[in-house]
Length: 228
Image (cartoon, rainbow, N blue to C red):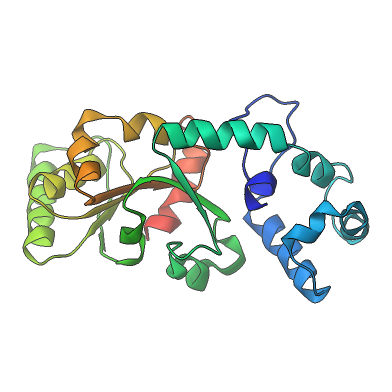
């Protein structure tokens, strides 16, 4: 149900209904709880109509989102075939820290590849410039090596420069990494430099955006709070 409401299901055309953002989803869930109902009750048209009367959503938007069963089946099959999993806030492996710290701004869905259990293990966030100097490379590698030596996961954003340098250093030396990426999860999950880490369950690549989402500055900035 959360996928129907909050995912683009791989669709990028303007005619597709706009998925609910984190705040909109949280407001809907709160209303359902107040009404002693759950998400499954949204398949009852009168429940959706009642919510539309008190919300600021476009009247047809919820109905359109819920009427995407065919697209949902195709998207889930495509992601599964490419090794991509999806978890919602109700799943065991969804990191509780995101909900505790971000409340109604926590992403309703996370898409990922690799060992989802790593998401709740904490670690050291290492992020920095995309245009990295030789001195910064050495410093980043030193930090990565210290993480491995002290059995601390490295958490980063997967971007060019400091982020990827730190991740690679830890992976090459047998450590664990969380890569919270802002875009292109599908491309990153098949990148050769991550293959061994994924295979050995020492790496998880995760995003709050559709796995095919291209790069945007807005998504990159929004991702930073998840890394933190």
